[in-house]
Length: 293
Image (cartoon, rainbow, N blue to C red; front, side):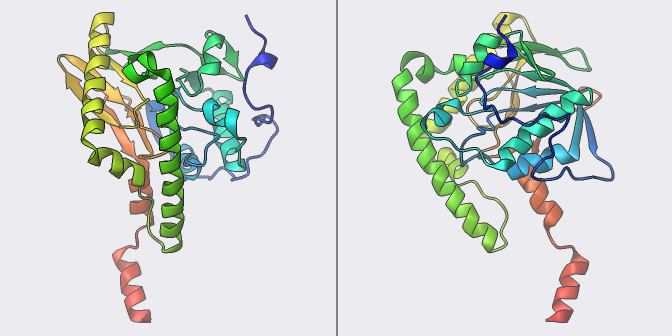
């Protein structure tokens, strides 16, 4: 088995036992408690990564098991250009801190962090690395956990096209950053330009639908009740021909997480919407503003 020193990850990852985060961990009066949380497609190392919202999520939520369902670190982008702001370290700090506090953390690598795949079975700082996993819910359902790139026909048949698409997607995400910087200055909530664009393109919608069917079929073939995946940045939960299909979305466009309640009930959390609702002025605030005006 490979040694921990050979893991292909940035050497300046934080030590949860001694390091302090750039953004201090918020002390919330009553944090939400879930049995299981799934997040994927964080893309640390890119400008599109919405680290502030993910940090806010981790500061409000606790769980017994945390699954990192691939594309957590964007190795493709880091190979081309080094970009690693303090907030990205803070995301890693919060994950490692959870492992230290007793949360089971399972990391299932994807295509953008494929350099981690050879370390299947390794344990890094309390984080288990598995090529795939099977999770049993509180109500007895077995779910296959995979990133999902293995079911992407573009990735399998035309790897060069995937890299071209990645370049185009990166350009769109840069535009997304600019748009939201302007919205932030105007006091407007986060809004995903890329998410709207993707759902406006007919071919993209057709691809998502076909992808979901292929993944659900694979779950049935494996003899499990369903599957949890990421990869396509499109959060969804539905039943497809008898198989449960869950996609936890991403933290670039939609900023979503899949959670399992303690009774086995599943839910998708749309965190950007929750933050916008939390920060929205109350009727009392609006009345006070009106009187001041």
